[in-house]
Length: 321
Image (cartoon, rainbow, N blue to C red):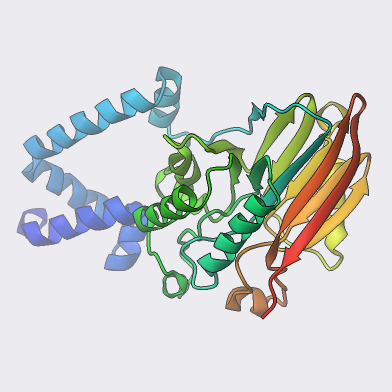
């Protein structure tokens, strides 16, 4: 029965597996996953030489990019996920100014790039020393029915090219980024690290971790946080629970959160906390969940002394319809 399969069908199965994985291909072809695997084995049998060449090139690229322990983890079925890291930002003085973005969701019909351009202009006008981004740089692509129709740029390459064009043309300030759950849809589907890839080769773009990362300014720690938990009736509750989860030795001086699309400043356990809002406007999905989107960005001035953060002035710049 296998030998009756046409080359055209097998090539189509191969393309669907490359794009969506075995389970995704099975759903689209309306066949069992094991049947997809059987068809792939037949495709490899018929195209052994070309397949071997592709595998050789792929292994060479993986060997150049990943270390031997990472390759072993991949071979054992473990997904490579970057841990949160710390990066130092060089600064001299006792007052620093920085901009904060979150949830830009580039590639979404609910994101207006003009708002991001306006934010970059304001950052330049205020002379910010750097910019933070607390995750969901890209819209990603989920398996939620209809999600593909909410994308202006469909797929990994299109969204990556879109974000590269924006960040390379509109600002040369240092931007420190973590990825968010929308960015990580590409990790979950095929292991692609889209925010890490965005920052590669760009002098001013810095990927500092998966879901969270630290910026060290002469011992002052700014922690960027995204998370996958939901919002809450009281906007402060989520931040309080995040702060409670941090042990004493891990507490930052400033915590800047994304994910919930809410704007808030509070001070808890000696941590200055900012929920950074969003550039993306309220989507239909958010409206169906009765979740508002505080669309805007922050510019924060912060006093630095020998004992830490002496004062802070966070200012939210909202967008109104």
